[in-house]
Length: 239
Image (tube, rainbow, N blue to C red; front, side, top):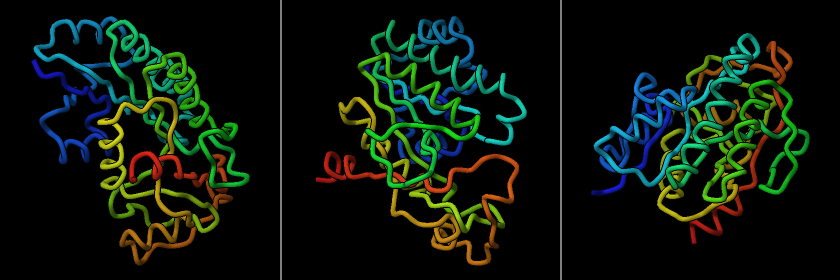
C-alpha cells in the first residue's frame, strides 16, 4: 500500500493550493473528519483509514491576530494543544511531522532572521504559534517551516508601508513546501522571497491600487520587520 502524506488544514489557503498541485499523494481531511483538538478522534481516523501514512504536514491553525486576541482560549486549543496532539500522534505512529509556523515568532527589531536567531513574539497569535513549535521540537523526526504567504493576488485594499517581509504568493510557498516534504530534512528552516515592504509586495502581486496603511493604525501589535534569511533553504534545496 502506498503511504500518503496527511495535510491538516487542507481546506485553507495553503492546503487548497497544494491540492491543486498534488491531489494524489496527499490526503486532505476536513476539520470534521480530523479535528486536531481531539486526540482520540484523530487516532481513530488513522486506525480506520483505508490509507497508510508516512508524514503529517500540520497547517491547521487559528491565524488571525485580531481573532486570537478576542478568543485566546480557542487559539490555545487549536494552535498549542492541537499541535501537541499532532506531535503525540506522530511519535506513537512513527510518522514524520512538518509544522507550518510563522515569521511572526520574531519581534521584528532587526529583520532577515536566521533559523538560529532568538524568538520573541510581540502578539498573542505569534505566541500561540511558538507554543506549537515548542511541542514540535520535542520530536526529532520533524521539520518546522517558518514562512509568510498570502493569496496569489494581494486581497486587501490597504497594505503596510512600514512593515518589512519576505512574504510570497501561496503558489510559490506551496511548491517550496512540497520540495521540503519530499526531503528528509529535520530541524527548522525559513522559506520566503526578497525583503520588501508589504505594500511593495502587494503591488508586485498585481494589486496596483493598494492604499497605504501603517502598523500604528491597527489594534494589535505588528512586528516591524519579520523578513527571513532563507540562505539555508537555498543551499540545501536549490543547489
